[in-house]
Amino acid sequence: MLPSTMRGWAAVVSAGAVAVLGALGLASIASSDDGQAVGRAAALSETRADTLQRYAVLQDPSRRATGETVAKAQSALAQAFHITPAESARAVVATAREDAAARVTVTGLQANGVCLSVSDHGSDSGSVGCTDTAYAGDAAHPLIAVDSVGEGRTRVTALLVDGISSLTVTGQDDARDVRVSDNVATAVVDSGPLTLSWTDQDGAEHRVSTTAG
Amino acid sequence: MPSHRSPSPARVLAVLGAILASSLALAYPARGDVDQWGCGSYGSAQTCWAGTGYRGYNEVNSGTWAGTPPRSEWCAKAQGSGGTIKAGSGCNLNAVTRISCLDNVSPNSAAYAYWAGSGSTLDVFAEARTPSSPSGHC
View 1 (tube, rainbow over the protein chains, first blue to last red):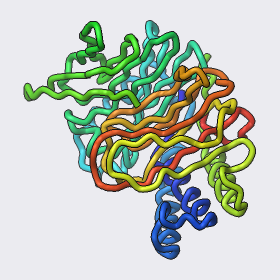
View 2 (view 1 turned 60 degrees about the vertical axis):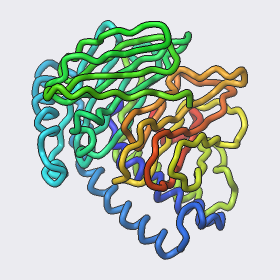
View 3 (view 1 turned 90 degrees about the vertical axis):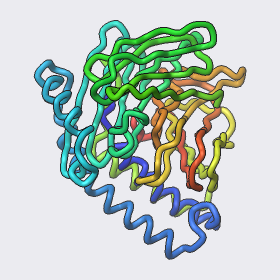
View 4 (view 1 turned 135 degrees about the vertical axis):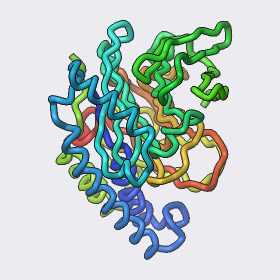
């Protein structure tokens, strides 16, 4: 698995990048003011320390995808989606799910934010992406990974809030409904621009489309 | 068995150390095993290449400041000289960060970050790593 606090990673990289870019005299990219850049880097460093403390818990091997872990984590994740950002800052939860068919482990982490981690057990590939809890907990803004798996195929993995039963994946030539199980929907489809749509528990319809980037 | 290893706090600290150490050198892009680049400040969709040519990367990452509202797509990819997107590349929708662990080592690949969706101006940072990088995530 790739449990990771991308928020922490972003902070680390951002702080480093500020230093690198500042050293290069590219202050217009990193910051218009050196003092401001240093201050921002320091603030990010504090965030990183908090993140690392939480992350130590998530490193526990017992949190791997055993049945008990999955059950606890799923419950915790669902709870995380319904608490306020302030409350979420004090929480550390994780969920993991094995999908034998897709050979994928999906992990949602919640510290200050929610992360979606996807590991393909059939290769060395995988991905992590994160966002703030407030957004991930919004039915309109679920975290979705769109990963190239080679041979012109793409794996879509969505981490959805409670009350969403299926995700419709529409490609260039077809559309398919993917069942949501334990807040996760995953499918492998042909590569190309995709439109993903879902209906939340209030009946509101949502969609997001990928671009060719 | 999955080949991914969870980056330990010590490894993350090592990342910080490596990045800060690299900041002491004026070489750009970063030397050796890690290429890092900034993408400037933009509010709309952008593609931002590493500019380091084709290398044997196994990891491409991109992100912005913590607390930034998510964008519709946030991507970190490696592309072969023939234009093929390397397996493991991809995007996260409604996110502000992306780690892409490529399928094994992708020889001769060019790395880039991409993000789509409108919003306030944001700073984007990216890096690409080779397998000999001591502190990668993959």
